[in-house]
Image (cartoon, rainbow, N blue to C red; front, side, top):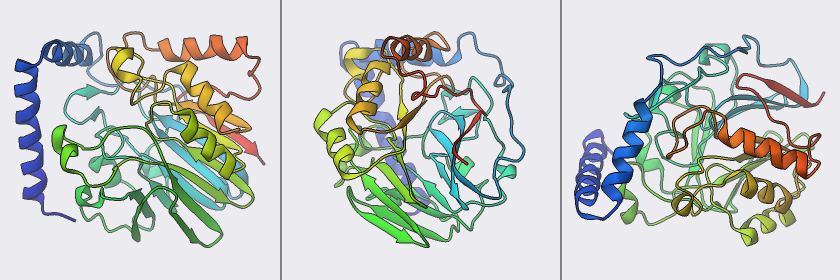
Length: 319
């Protein structure tokens, strides 16, 4: 863990570089201005109420269930073990991107939590305010090199993991798997990172296997290797942001690429994530990515394997 003043130094140094780049580099200032404008246009002062909010999301026992809280936050239960991915419950991600729709559960509903999985350290995936709301009994899994950004929350354990590293305890095995994204939290601080501070995870427990992709661009070799190493029951795969695609394609997946990942990892089922919740990139319509995905799912006859959930909806895949 690093001291608070060192984190502030990284933030201000990165902000200065971003400001200078926005002024000097052609097109950069335009993108930054458009993104900030998009973050505030046509949005209510508070997030829209979610139609589903489960006050009792944890079962006494279930084979496999997933509740989409919103964005990349999923509450996963395998047997009696409870996992949450990239928890974010706050109304903004960082200081700019506003939440469109309320989270599907409240942290107060989580009276039991075993593992917190952090895929990377960007504001919409590593939310300090949200982590402070979670039970301290949980263990936190995070990418190698990202511990420098984690304040001391008092969780039961912190595990920094390199790709293909596994952690095993009490019938649970969690493996960090490669992703294709980018480093840093404040912008250009990623330039001095010695490791890739981003990852995906594969959870194995009680005969079930869940793949959480985190944020990632598309790389067929990477995902086919994951598919060869694991027999995946469920894949949680991001489908947005989409625009501007010439930039986003290197670090994010659109609906078509998300379905390629689904096929590459050879999962039985897929739940799309990372859409509808926050302003992302230059995507304008609230359900653009979801609409595109639904069309592709119908074309590929995947209606019974790709499960498009509403925020707050819980799916039982094994009773």
